[in-house]
Length: 125
Image (cartoon, rainbow, N blue to C red):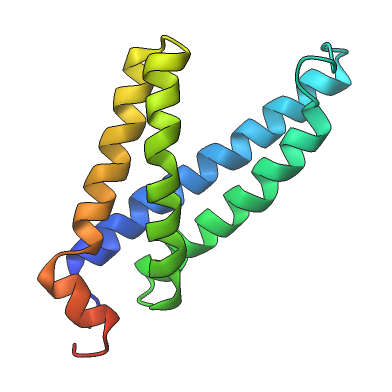
């Protein structure tokens, strides 16, 4: 049986995936409306967010539904969000966003390494 910690982590990961997909849509809309493509290539960046967001959403769905394969993707995504959080908070001077991303990543990592989650991931559930 899938532990509640894994299901909760899966919900957070799924929300992260949905947010990435929303960012992809926003970037495409900006590009279609004529936003300057020299600063940010809206189509290329949207494609990246689409692929990554889709994978993260799939990982969240997998965790919520008790599939072990989603854990690896979720852990890697959270580890990648930590430097993103640093850049948001320090590099971009968006402290509130940086703290939010960091908290989500740290809490999700914490949920995925609890003893019950580790036992589940190893097949000892």
